[in-house]
Image 1 (cartoon, rainbow, N blue to C red):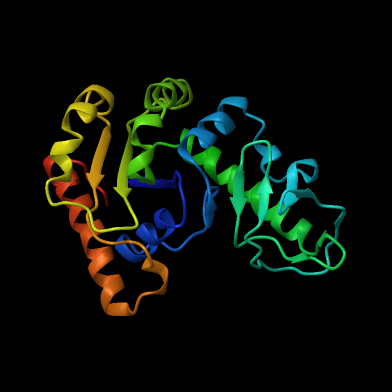
Image 2: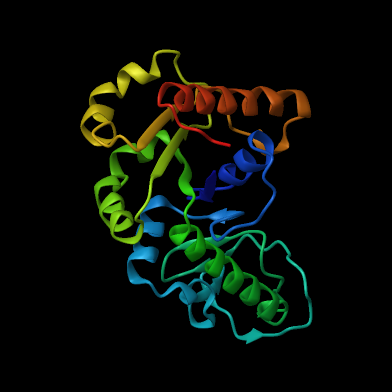
Amino acid sequence: MVDYIEFGDNFLPFIFLKEVLYIKEKSLFSHGVFDFNNILKYIQTDNYEDICKKEYLTYDNKPISNFYDKIKNYSQSPKIVNTKYDFGFSHDFNYDVSNNCINNYNFVANKFTAKIKDFKLKLKNEKALMFINFSFYNAINNIKIDEMINVLNKMINKKYYIFFFFYDYQRMPNNIEDQYSELCKNKFNKYDNVKVIFLKSDFSNWWNEDDKVKQVLYGEIREGFLKICSESNIRIF
């Protein structure tokens, strides 16, 4: 059995779990902007509750003045950011620009408390772990994989994997793997539990495409994932 953890950067890890593995759950790093290196900074501190502390939340770079419990559901406010970790929350808080307030703060904070508990449980239970990251090609050089492996090795005493799906908002050349082969050899491939998948389709508007286009995009993700799992003898179910 395997537990899956969305591990940045944007919304595609959630789509991967939902559309490829048919796992429908909202976890700690779901439905927001969570850069891989910022996740590293976050889990290094062990102050997990800071993810939604009031003093770190801003709207459009302005501190938020008021926090209420009027609404008990998720909402969409794409300009809300945690300034401590530079996490972006697009589908969590209900923000009212007229009086600079969040109307569902307690609801979201309680959900994060539950997601933090679930995250810690997945680190400690007996199931193997798979961290799923989608990042842009231009982030490859800056990804702090050595630091992340060092941190995770201190936190996890069982088998785990990190899967990187690299994509862009344009169609990539068919030989894109060759362009990064030396970098992968020195940066990622030295770790047996780190896997890299290069996506080549145009993801410029993937969330707004019709179902036929989405299935093509999701199919490429699925094919790359299953190929790596087969080659590495990774049991995913």
